[in-house]
Amino acid sequence: MFAASFANLPGDHVLNKPVVVSEEALVTPVIGPDATSDSIAKAAGPAYIVLGGISFSHFLNDTMQSLIPSVYPILKASYALDFAQLGLITLAFQFTASLLQPVVGHFTDKKAQPFSLAAGMGFTFFGLLLLSIAQQYLVILIAAALVGLGSAVFHPESARIARLASGGRYGFAQSVFQVGGNLGTSMGPLLAALIVVPFGQPSIAWFSSIAFLAIIVLWRIGRWYKPQIAARKFSAVEPHPDAPDSRRVKLALAVLVALLFSKQLYVSSLSSYYIFYLIDKFNVSTQAAQLYLFLFLAANAVGVFFGGPLGDRFGRKYVIWFSILGALPFTLALPYAGLYASAVLTVLIGLIISSATSSIIVFAQELMPHRFGMISGVFFGVAFGIGGLGAAVLGEVADHTGIAFVYQVCAFLPAIGLLAVFLPKMPSTAR
View 1 (cartoon, rainbow, N blue to C red):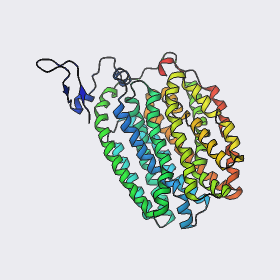
View 2: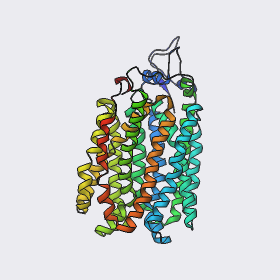
View 3: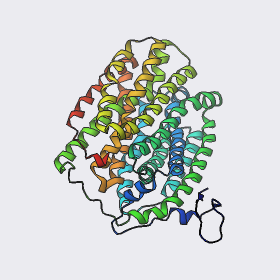
View 4: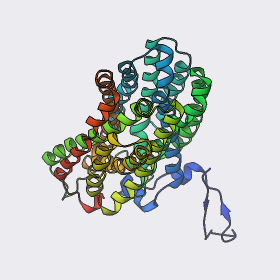
């Protein structure tokens, strides 16, 4: 899989002759007295094969995760569930993912586990199989929790691998990593419409083959990652002299959490209940509603892809400002739009609001570079937790007031983006 071509070879070798280099020799770092893993990564440039592999794994992981809300109409009809019970399924999935991600990140900060990603994907594999045969509500909750556990293991360490492979282009690498997940999330409703709706709940078992493919890819990435651990094992991260002090760091982290809350709760309102909103307000079919949801989620993926490089170039604070507040006019208009106008508005909302994802996460990582795994786990965990709790709360609200009222209230969430004014200016070398 890994090969290198060298222009000048010693001895009797022919010039420009392609030479296959062993994987271990290719990726083993050369460490000088003052080298750190970040300086090595910058000198080497982005490792595109690794970035592509970890993004593809994120795609597979989130494709499987997004099946859970996509099959809600089937579960609701089969087991006579109300919106609150559907919200609890999301909560079961997001609860394990959100609580365990910081724990996994804290552990891997101290002792990296290069093959933990492949092992964690096994939980997703068994969770999907269990969901396909579940006949009781409690079993459905357990299956959703297993898929969430696989996600908890996957995200913190895979974010670290993306940074190691970034070549110093941290926003770009985070966007490549994130866009795989967003594309996977957008594929869930489409696959549910094409496969699960026609063939029913047992067809979910077919998607366990995706988990098996992800295990293979992540095992290969683990082999690349293992020798990289030597480059960062004992390298201390020195704070930049212009970096904000501890008080400003704490304030900035609180602001970033609030911004992530506004973004993630709004996205959760659409990903969990937009199908029911379209069915209730416009009387469209379940399959048609899933296709409209696919448009929103695909727009999310595009926005994530461009948000990271824009943050690298212009500064993450400006991208965060634009992406959160910029979506406000469109979210305010959505509850009063017709069917086709709603589709256009959700695409615009997805493009704008998702461009903050990479910038928020990289900003937080740069505030606490010495706790990279933990801070990545916290922010991924907060994102999952907000999604789960938000889905449960919004489900209760929808049961009592109607699904349309949910979007009238959530329309004001992007106004929280005004808090970005409290974010500190980061050193240019951290951008």
